[in-house]
Image 1: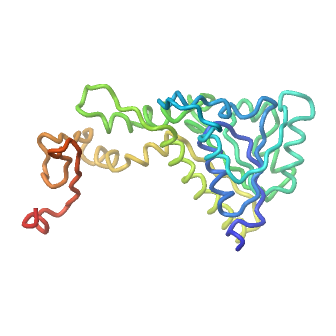
Image 2: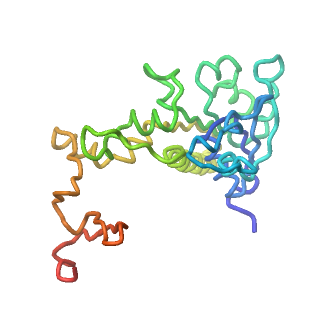
Length: 266
């Protein structure tokens, strides 16, 4: 059965994780995703799985395959004459242009929204950056660890106890959360294009996605005027919403948010 994005063509000029994983989700939904790679390939192809702690000689790059499944690929050297023009020609029949190139590179290669709108007025221009395309960090590259976890405050929110070494996330967690946000933005843009006939611009950032992830803490801080208190498992305000070690050295987590309802059952 055809997917909901069957017939939608996506040109993906993106590398590493966050934007490519959004392209993979679009491919899952039936879109024809064409990944534009430099002659040496997406740098993520060279990811060493041992960096994640595995002591195993993997036969393939499982991380790259996960975030680039279901796509076609074309090699284009954007630094050579004719390269950017080829991408613009690909976009003449595309519905979505997906990119995480930094703003200076988009301008250098003629792959800005205005440039693509000139060849395809109805295109959805989907931009993913670390910190946005405006402001003091607009030209700064952003990664999962830096933009989503550190700069957005997610690491600090999970730090146990306060003042200790911040926790390190598992690979791709922030990237994948951000990719879902970008997918939602593209789907909304396609729907709006169906209604208006006009192309759209959508922008998602790693830092903004991280801030949304801990948005409840930010909301509380705006109301209370102070940072959200850290959870202390040694002195929890609700003892049946906490983690406990069992006799056999494992851990259980109790998630009973209504003590008045469940206390008698504990």
